[in-house]
Image (cartoon, rainbow, N blue to C red; front, top):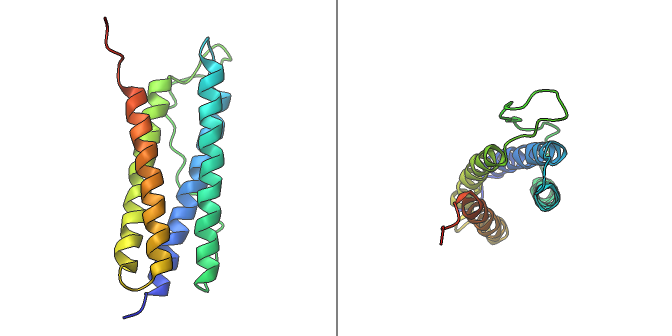
Length: 153
């Protein structure tokens, strides 16, 4: 049994495209947050953009390792469009977090598909998929916690 490299490369390219779309989206959102809590939110969004770029690079490296050609495409760019062009308007942070969660779900789905494809066929690809699943699940949990309302005392 050997890894179906064509399927693995296709999945890795989808992952790379999705992660690059996340970089663009998080960067955009960081520019669109205003208000008293701006600094920590922008810092978190920029960190997510940087992490997405690292994830895209890892996927691209595996594409070339498997003999494939890294995609030059970027995945879908989702946005709430809940703001107008006025500088006084900010994207609602809850909307940003909901879209982030949807992005994590898509990423997790692709990483799980890659894991299933690689299990028992490529330890390298299998371990890569597992490590990315851990990272994405941790990130999704972080977003879910940010979406929860603090308890009133």
